[in-house]
Image (cartoon, rainbow, N blue to C red; front, side, top):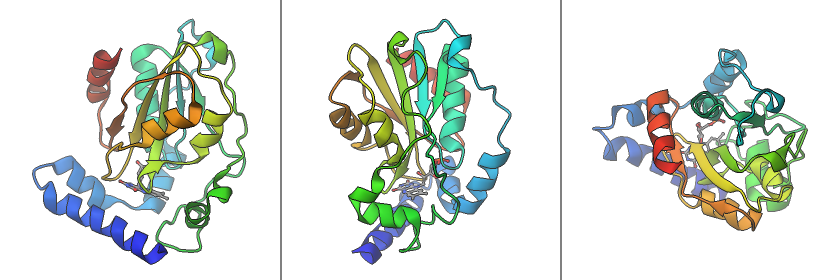
Length: 216
Ligand SMILES: Cc1cc2nc3c(=O)[nH]c(=O)nc-3n(C[C@H](O)[C@H](O)[C@H](O)COP(=O)(O)O)c2cc1C
């Protein structure tokens, strides 16, 4: 089954290259996809200011999980554009590049993927400061095997979204956002969840800004 999934994911990525030859960004992202490279980028990506919830009067909160920095970049764009507060979902035990190697059947993500019980990732903090004071929540995550990376699940299950508008966004090498937002909405059971959007590692602030204009 694992081999089949690995073959399926490889086929999806290859088809993306072949089927989207007029989409330069997409082809580049897929052909350049390298987890260890991404981890390095994440560790050195400190050019964006991180807002603490206390700093802003805004009622918008950007919550995100990012293993290798791509989703974090988009989250910071949203913060800049909306003057939102920000909250990073951080697993107690961070994922190393080895942990993230989805091609390795024995890696942490592979073992978690194969057994749902292993996906209950403990977080450093589950609830952001003044969560109740925010009425619009952007929630961002990378796509893992077609769904939201599961460290996000502990945040979703641990908070009440009643009265809040929740807007998912994700990053992926080639997959679309698919059902990931709907699955999180079902998991939450509360809140008004809007359709989300997928971004790439090359997505620019202008694209994020246009999307925010449309959804808010
Ligand atoms: C375990 C794992 C599974 C992944 N599965 C997919 C996938 O199903 N489809 C896809 O397009 N990209 C997949 N990717 C690529 C990530 O979604 C993509 O690199 C994302 O932008 C990483 O975001 P981050 O840097 O914020 O962690 C996967 C990456 C990892 C580590």
